[in-house]
Length: 154
Image 1 (tube, helix red, strand yellow):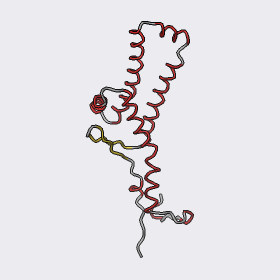
Image 2 (cartoon, helix red, strand yellow):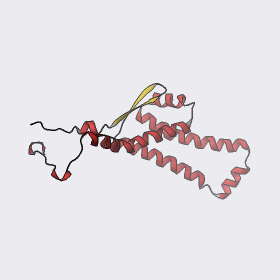
Image 3 (cartoon, one colour):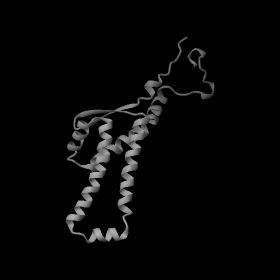
Image 4 (tube, helix red, strand yellow):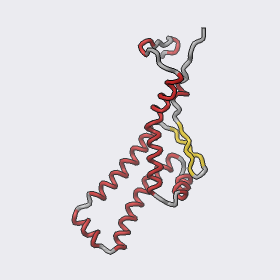
């Protein structure tokens, strides 16, 4: 009698390859990556909230400032976001790869944030996607009848 073996490693493929500009980048999804993505999102959100919560007087001052000062303010904010997101890509891939990705997207911080969002979406979906796809191959007939061999228990 053949025993069915469920390959959990096959069901939970915890890495994804992403293609950017013809180059392949691999992300290994684990707690560290999820934590780093969350940290980046929180830091960027905090920065945006700080901008929105700029006191009314400061807002008026900025609105009445010369265009060059307004542009400088915007550039500083973009630079801060860029530093946060580039730090993430440097940790995930490498400094050279982060720079290459940034240049590939015409030095657009918004594009980097979008790529981060895509990677984040995959980090959230990867386990569910794998489990759902594999359920068709290995349907659970009755989860209450699962038994484990004593030889594999610790």
